[in-house]
Length: 119
Image (cartoon, rainbow, N blue to C red):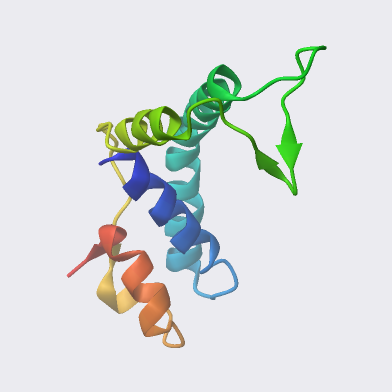
């Protein structure tokens, strides 16, 4: 599973956090824990990538304008970030049967977590 897909699935699982059902809640919690083992180091790599490519002031602090980090070479940063998002990770997700999904799950929520649904 690519890094970008891991981030999307994690966001999808987070958006399903208010849905009920013991089996479903267990699957959401278990998968978030599995994904976290990849996401934490990924965020560290993103932070390093930002730091390596950011414009810095005389004291070496990263320059931000309106919350946006200013890059020395934005094209280079974007290329490296895209490459990082395409890296494959081997993870084993906890699947949930379709009959164990909450009745009130929306189509958008279901679409965002299809990777863990077992038909």
